Image (cartoon, rainbow, N blue to C red; front, side, top):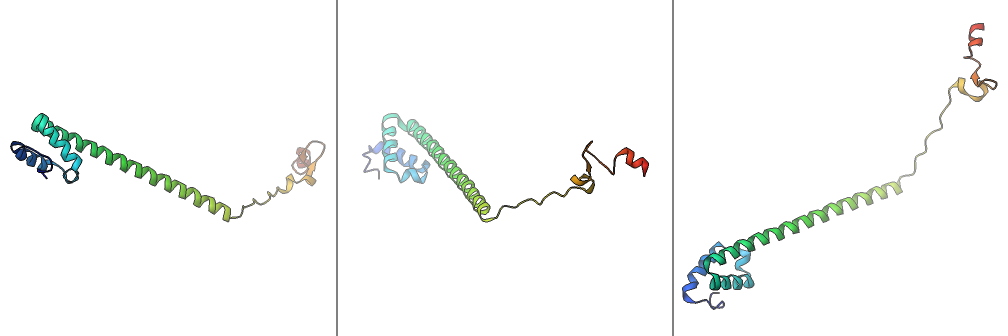
Length: 130
């Protein structure tokens, strides 16, 4: 690996040291290795380590965004499925009609005095006369 990066002999040990501090996904990425080798050649160990820290942080942010996106998609799918299930349930179930309201006996139209809109049974004059 060091041979492919054309590192001088004095930097190979430093590069091996950097490799030990890198996550596996960075060690397997040739572009990342080339980038860190350039950092090592131009700015030394300090710049190369800073580059690794920044790359790790960027990777964490990317993973976080991916997780949030997957969670959002899962929530949207659950909501859509629930709405479809509710819609299918509403289509399958017949509409319920409410039973007719039964009027009390003294409020039926035949028991209402048409002159004063009061029931004949509960009219004060009728109650006293009974």
